Image: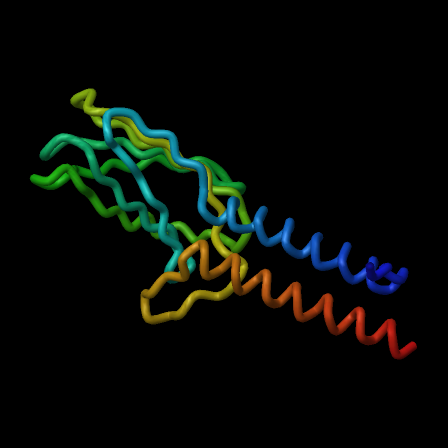
Amino acid sequence: MRTFTLKTQRVFVLLTAVALVSAAIFLLLGGITHAQDGASITPSFGDGKLKILGEGFKANEKVTIAVKLDSGSHTFTATADAQGAFELDTGLQVPPLSSVELDARGDQGSGSASITSVPPAVPLPQTGGTLSPVDAAVLVGLVLLVGGILLAARRRVS
């Protein structure tokens, strides 16, 4: 049976902390969605500005979207298409890691959806692509892991 030295225990604690922080970031980036009647909304921060995608509403239904940011509250309306989906470019600049609360309600009572999300801290490509929450969490976890390993190695040399 191998016994751990104090240095090995520190590295193990550091790696455990990295794993826990990565899991927390994954949960934050994924957002929390509450929906009724199949309606759903998804925020997108591809260019640093908030875009909202909705689905599951009635065809041609008017949807009121409340947006709550750290900087204030805003209200928008969108009209669902024949399939019950909409896409809304809000034009709102959302700083990385700030809180975003969304609530969408259809005027025909088809349902409502709300979500709390956080834009990723990692800059996204300017091509309009998005970085999935899983990819962002893995990237942050890797950065923290490499940093922890380098820090442990530096302490070992000292």
